[in-house]
Image (tube, rainbow, N blue to C red):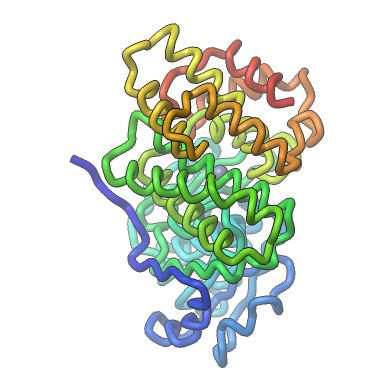
Length: 379
Ligand SMILES: [Zn+2]
């Protein structure tokens, strides 16, 4: 028995962003546009539609920024939200859409630092158009907001945050610079692997996670080394979409549990933090499972993931760890030390991460000492 939560419609394929303008009249007249720092970049995708308000999202969003954006959208009478950009932009779009539909404030629903009140009513129609291949935010049912006051990131989480339309056009990622391709691509891969080894996995999440792992592992280096490789970009867009579907249905693990906390303490891209943690977490999980839960399905799941990652039928979990380490190195991902995390902060990170929602899908409970060792190995 399982539930499968997915966007109402997923439109995938090269060139399909051209369908956006024709789609909008069926969803609402007054459009709120959420974009990255440069709103004119993808403006043409709206065709003749003139948005009633434009929200720019230059970095990972704060509670206050979402509150201000919602107020603006409400004042302008926005009926439909279109978000075109990376994960942060898509998260702002879905948060604003749900707050418009409910007449509420971000802190009403935010987990951990807010009141965590369940979202009761539907969002206004929301179209997600990703321009990076990484977060899978077009397919997830949560929006991550940072709360600078508490130095923490937390989510609004509800099936009502699922997009009305996820419009995924891999051609929009062709202009992604190599560093963004690397960090977002490794995030996508992590978001396929963590749900795949999660105790919350189900047959449907397994199917999409395995396919995302296989495609992403084959294409990531090619997309990084040659941004114009359309086939690799298409595979990475699928890896990202499938990672989003997988995590929305099977949860994430210790990479994201720790990365969420680190991201609230240092200013570094989410994907880069995940990438640095990836191999050390897999090693720590496998070691802990072998010692404490040798019969665990988690070990069998890691064993099944190894051929998907390495492309070799006979690959072991150790081969998979080596593959992950070599891939992260080939993609020039900086260690945690380089993004400003200090050893004096490890204990605090471990303590906060142990309580994080993302830890729920980890195949084994890691101790504070094990989490500190992971941080040290990733630095
Ligand atoms: Zn992620």
